[in-house]
Image 1 (tube, protein in one colour):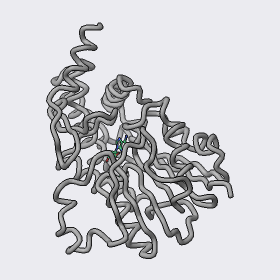
Image 2 (cartoon, rainbow, N blue to C red; image 1 turned 120 degrees about the horizontal axis):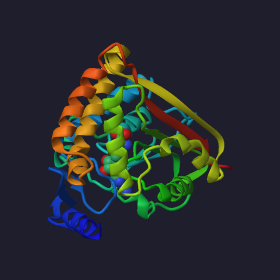
Image 3 (cartoon, rainbow, N blue to C red; image 1 turned 180 degrees about the vertical axis):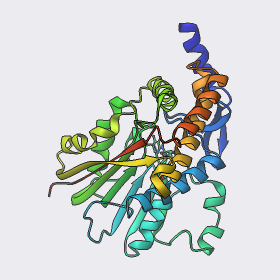
Length: 305
Ligand SMILES: C[S@@+](CC[C@H](N)C(=O)[O-])C[C@H]1O[C@@H](n2cnc3c(N)ncnc32)[C@H](O)[C@@H]1O
């Protein structure tokens, strides 16, 4: 057991290279960010998935946020990914300074000056590199609105209270913190269940509990935030769910494929078994027998004045 643990650690730290100015490593056949528990890839396929997912969520949730934020003058997006959300907020609130923070800098194409020329990078948007697990590089009470979406594959269970306390710390009294997470697809049949189980076991290797999203409201209350609201929004996954269901299907299976190499490298299942199960799951979610549901968790709270 120890031997395999050593092998795994070695494999995970060998061959660290630099990509877009930050450490990256090839693991399970895809390039990933080195030095953090997060395990989704950082390549063009994943960049496209994140952009697609942003538009899907904005459409499904009928907007980019749920908290009653009024007219914020400073906004932070933690784990901003491709920066779509933050840049849209910068356009919606041109009077606000919007900061996107991520451990992975934007892809070189995104960072290129052509972006600004095309109007895709509003002048009131800035990117800052940072690792939220090490604390946020901002003074107390800096932002009116602090947002974090879909970091449930990045934050080990025992780090969640610290991360949420950091989000609260950098938010001004009277300002809002909003969290959006996902996880735990259900009613998709045994093949979908198997994929979820393998992903869950892979995450557990890094101390990540994929069910943590359901606790967002308690986490916000635990930091002393007031007017906390938390709800589950169950999105359909599969053609039965119309446009949202079809988009969710593409997003889910692209995301799962991003974990495939790690799952098989860890020996949780074989590459053949994974491929067979993935094909079965893709067929199942479009049969009338199953109506797969993908839960999202949305919670927000106000920092006490
Ligand atoms: C699934 S993506 C979500 C991106 C974005 N929030 C969105 O909703 O489109 C997760 C993001 O978290 C970033 N991330 C992972 N670990 C992080 C850490 N410790 N600190 C900051 N960002 C991190 C990843 O680089 C990735 O961009």
